[in-house]
Structures are given as structure tokens and as C-alpha cells.
Image (cartoon, rainbow, N blue to C red; front, side, top):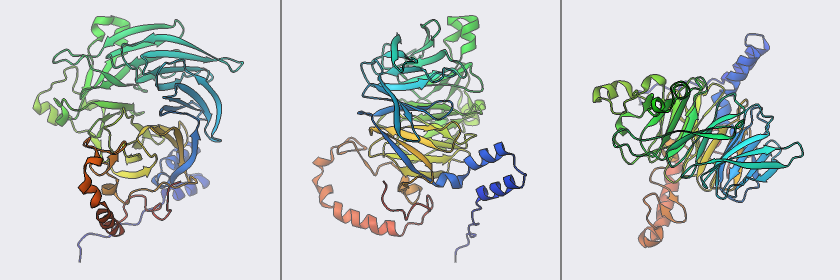
Length: 454
């Protein structure tokens, strides 16, 4: 007989919150936040709509401030404004880029008429939607390499930042149409340029800018020092973030960054995991601390089981107070973790190929996803199609047990050369089926009987 205590039954706090609101014990705003953050609601996420109009990979999805419009950019060089609730296209236009559109964003307080884009063609462009419905596009500036991400200054209809594979970070002002070269990111030890893939502005401290790319550090720069003291004092970061065991690792990089509303910083590492840094975990301006200092300060929360190798993959928060961490994966799943302890709560089958982008709705408990597939998926509680999910975290793991891209496995070997593995595949499959029948359900126990994904 096992000595483990029996699990306590899970309480549906959403029902309790409804009762508290009805009897006046819970204000409407508190009720909305608690309800949207409910894990019971999270476990009911299912596929609501597919938005299918692009003819290439969808590299960027973002909601407007009101949450009624969704903006997307694609390898087909088109930018589309969607009424996501009805899955209808409100406007589609040619971005003016000559190569894949990597990111497209609405500018705040522009009545959703100002859109900025960045792309593989090294360009940063501005699109203005006129009253007639026509769109004027213009070139704002260029990097010396692909421009993966841009970050809008919170609350500003005019100001945003870009980062490129040339290591440069630029500031753009739509009033003057001037691009300012702020700095080129370089690693301190050998002064080599760091190819940048991610950029984010701290919403609580808009003067702080995070950038990351092809090395192990997320760097924080203080924009205010540039504005007050000029170029020379601004080129050095004010802080660095990195898990202690990755310092000095030449084989990792960061593909995605995201700030929470508490100034926590998420960093998604290629060929590694996702880490959550609080402001007090920084290494300071010097990126090579002593081993003692590293052990004392580098204890970030970690989020595992997804796979981030093939693409420049983003990461994000979910929930009204950023209670959850969400990411796509090379295996085509959406992974959702509880932020505070890193527990994997959902691993939803989403795409046939890589999922790169997850965007949370600004007010409602729903999200959208996109990636190598040409469509965009909207996920809501009680969606019409429930995603098939692995029974537990071990099954959900994308490490070492899946094949990628047209017959190539995770080690890059062509499976067609391995005839012996093909001959034994039937026996392996039957053995796996027998094992799966005896797996204890730990994740998505409400979805396991729903059958095939839509």
C-alpha cells in the first residue's frame, strides 16, 4: 500500500467567484480578472476560428488596443486586418516589402490607421490607412540585415524601436520620419557584433529597452541616458540577464523576449528552455560575474518540454495579470505553463508544422497562434473544436521523439537512409499504443475523450 496521501479534489474557483459577485462580495473588475485567470477556464481552451487568407507562413499576429481587430504579416508580403470574431478580412494590402514580413503592429492612439512593419528585406516601413480605405506605404529606414522584431513605445502614436541581424537598434519617429541609430549591440569580451532577434519595452518603465539575439544574454538599455547624455554613454547596457549555467555557452541564443506588467522578463532560448527573470536577478553592467555572485543571483524560473530549434520563436504571457507563460514549439503544439512554479498545464496540438507566434487578447481570456502553416488560429474557452493533448508532460515533451521538416529528425539526419528503422516501425508503433493505454492522465483530462482534432 502506497504511503502517498490521496490528492485533494480540485475546487472550481470560477463557480465560487460567480457566487461572490452575485452577492456583492466581489467587485466586477476583480471578478473579471479572477475569472479570466482561472485554470479551469484555461483547461477549456479550444479552437474557435481559423483565419485563412495568407499564402505563406504567418510570422506576425497582434491585436489592436480594443481587441476587436487582429493584424497579421506573412511570407506572402501581405498585411491583413481581420475581424477575428467572424473570421472575415476587413482589409488586405501589399506591405511594399520585397521579402517575408516578420512583424506588423498597430501604433497606439492612431484609430488603427497607422501600421509599422519590418521584414527580411532589411526594411522598416510605415503604412497609413486613408479615409477612402486605400493604403499609403513608405520606407522609413533600413538595417544591414533582416529585421525580425520591432517594439512600440507604450502610449505613443509616433515612437517605436527595431532590431536587426546587423546588431543595430534604431529609433523611429513618425512625426519626422527620421530613423536614429541608437547603438550596435556588441558582446563585451571580444567586442563582436551580436545578431539581434528580439526587442521589448518594459511597460512599467518605458525607458528600459531589452534586446537579445545570437548569444546567451538579454541586455537592458536605459533610453533616458541616450536622450540626456548622448551616444557615448548609451552604448553600454545597464543590466544583463542569463541563467548561471548558460554563461559562456557559445551554442545558445535568445529568439524571443516579453515583459510582464510587473517588469519580469521572459527569454526563450534556442536549443534550451524558457526562463523568467525578475529585476533583482540582473548581473549588472558587467556580464561576467564571479562564480559566487552567479550562484547567489541566478535562480530564474524555468519552463520546459517545448522545442525551440528550427525558427525564430516568440514567447508571451497570458492572463489578466500575466499568470501564465505561453509558447509555440517545433512540434506544432502550444505549451502553457503556470508562471509561478513552471508546471506545464496544457500542450495543445495546433499546427502541422512549427508554431512561432502566440498573442494574448488585451482584455479577454483568448489567444491566437500562427507559424509555418498559412492560417491563424483563434483559441477560446469552450471552442468548437477541442485540441488533442498529450496525457502528461512526458508525452508532451518535444525532445528527441519527433521528426521535423520533410523526413529530417532532430539530429538533422535523413530518415530515408535508415531502412532498418522503417522495417521495425510497425512493431514500435504497436508497443507505443500499448504503453499509452496505461498512462495516467495528468494534463488536459477534460479533453482526452474528444477524439480527433478539427
